[in-house]
Length: 438
Ligand code: GLC
Image 1 (cartoon, protein in one colour):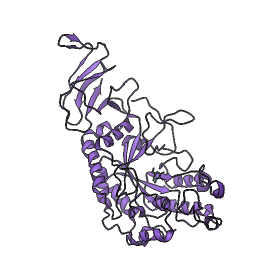
Image 2 (cartoon, rainbow, N blue to C red):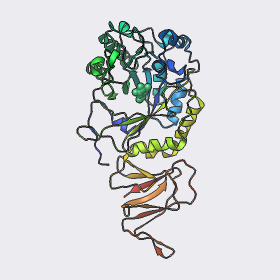
Image 3 (tube, rainbow, N blue to C red):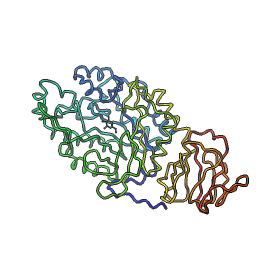
């Protein structure tokens, strides 16, 4: 067994750590303007104008089974769908609002189809639920709100009662956690209690756990779905730490105790979370694979996001990106699932990463740059029983200790293990060498 122990939490994170790779799905009305999911507040779009999206939202090509198939093929083991994003629009048939998909031309419960389809493919099912709500009449206007610059914002906001909004969230979370069977993850987003208005806007307060009544909200979720995994963004520490659009360079630790924590980086293919038609910043195939490997090599999970179009399908760019994962994971998933950071004694050589199976028996060497002919592994002499490329199971020969090459002694060290690799890089984005330890 590897030696790492993570901080204990209430939720069942065991399956989560073994899974390592999930799909985030940001889908809502903002797929129509197709220029970022924060569009309503970025452009301070008035309600009447935003209503156009509500009026015409028609995901006629939505086939959740197709999404689930692509997620599974990409090697993802779970998914998290936005049931409601900051715009406040609900993707299920909530009885607590009219602002929901069943009242648009969509006419169906989109969450239900997602749950059924992903579960049928054997994936775990998660819900993202926005704490922020730019539609709800009791949500006080603040610095992130689309109405923040309205001359009469104060008048509009002064009678708003955030406690009623907190109750609305509990009602909706109750719906989500009782009417869709077992839900594995609840992803609240997010708190900003430090972001207060200044000057004329001094009355605009940021929001956090007191506004959301997070304690009650979380207790409710735990009562309804014991074992559910909850993120930290309701401003009360829970099960998972969620670095966003940022890749940690070491295993994330608890800020007070220094313990290792269960963490999940969330990332996008192109920069925004919602479908963004004109975005040109799509990540390269190499980067996609490296991000996954880097994450697991530091003991974390990767939640990679897809922003479906308003018609309900993954556009070609997203499908191609998923295909990159599918092609690689088909042969290399053994170096991801059930793997974690390698024991400290195993130090990866330049341009490589190690992952190690949690049972400690196998070490995986991921070759980010393909070196010429030899790879020197310090400290591994005498420890490896057999080595092979993972993608095709072909033997990789190795020698240990002192090495001779045309009569010249190469770096000499008794603890050196030298892998002999073919001159031509195998046809695989990031080749992996599997080392069976003695
Ligand atoms: C954020 C953003 C958001 C996105 C999320 C994903 O905090 O507000 O649009 O849903 O992070 O991590």
